[in-house]
Length: 210
Ligand SMILES: Cc1cc2nc3c(=O)[nH]c(=O)nc-3n(C[C@H](O)[C@H](O)[C@H](O)COP(=O)(O)O)c2cc1C
Image (cartoon, rainbow, N blue to C red; front, side):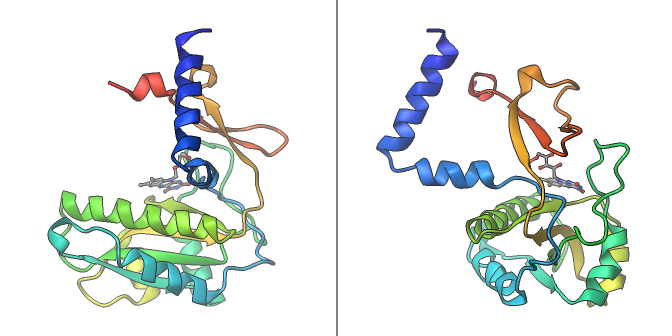
């Protein structure tokens, strides 16, 4: 048996021994989804519940600089959708069509000057939101590709509140699979096959362990 297999088996045994198999499944299924079933929307109350989870995550010096704007009604969704850049690596895809767009968004914002610590808080909070949405049977995608001032204007955000990350949410309507990065066709870029499946290459454990 080669060393890669031995390591994979040891890790998977360790997960089971420590009761981590459900958490492993959650992390694996918490992918970036960009096509949704708009007929099966995320309830506005769930978006607020996700923010309630996020507000209790760790924060550098416990400053808690993040604020959140929940977007669920159709006019506001229509206002911010065209401001978002989807899947830069899929050059011939302009983003989800009508009917497969997110049914809700959480816009994570800074309430003051943005430091590197604000961005670390943002990552912790956003991943918590996405994991919880996945656990609840939904899915989503974090989006950074937008002009903050345009999103702020579209949502009428107060002065001094800067959108940092948009988390799009909905019921996934696409299949996303993880692939070994060693066999990926174009570096670490994700790709989509003609059957509509979205493939995401990930580095192997040996590649990330120093
Ligand atoms: C900080 C951050 C910003 C991102 N911004 C965008 C974005 O603007 N547009 C987009 O389509 N995906 C965006 N993504 C999703 C990534 O493309 C995605 O995480 C990556 O392709 C790996 O897929 P996975 O999340 O399923 O592992 C972002 C992800 C992160 C963590």
